[in-house]
Image (cartoon, rainbow, N blue to C red; front, side):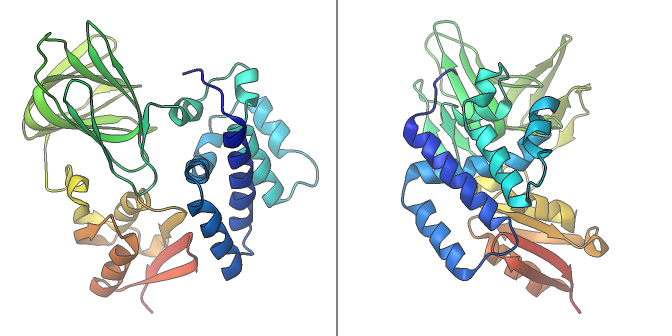
Length: 317
């Protein structure tokens, strides 16, 4: 999409970059956190800009070398200056001027987005239902021949409606395409690959070169650069996010924390010594602090908080 950010959006990105640098500097006071919260809550543009700043560290890996070098290798740059400069680079029109269209830029201007920790329900023009999971971005392209959803980031749950014109309904990711066959299903995408899980009826997955696989209710499969993986059965964790939970069944602690981290700002990690501890239970995604409290109560673990945005789980002393 080619829309340029408005002056208000640019200013919000500048302010978000300053706050991001401040909160990442390691010298954050309670007054700083309260001031940031007031700024964040005062304007929807502020909230959108802050969500974008959270993607900075992930987006940096994809920056062209010369851009990265000019941002980070300036002599005397402090950590705060580096973060601010990188945030501004991603936030402004510089990338477009240089002719590099990043995934981050496309996601920022997607038709529908959800924030970190948000689940967003959308009714499409044909009556189909789309539920966006946390930190997701999609474009929707309906015309006379097709109904198409392009999933840039995150996860969606689709419930298709009957179409009088019999147009096919597809969900596309960077890794392939999912054709709905009168169905209810989820599709997710990240940097490593995509996955589809069928809740009702069937879908057909296709990747290039031509490779196709039909799935029925209760089945899921991953697909990506290596093609389509092996069929697996759905488990209790599939689509649990629709009901507001992450479900773990003998799940390594580091895997569970990575899932919970998608629903909260900042860093959530664990000490390597407890990374492989097996965890079972249901943990709320609508209140990740409650989830961490439950984790600490049920297992020999302690939650350490350097700040609200830097949390580490360690073994209980």
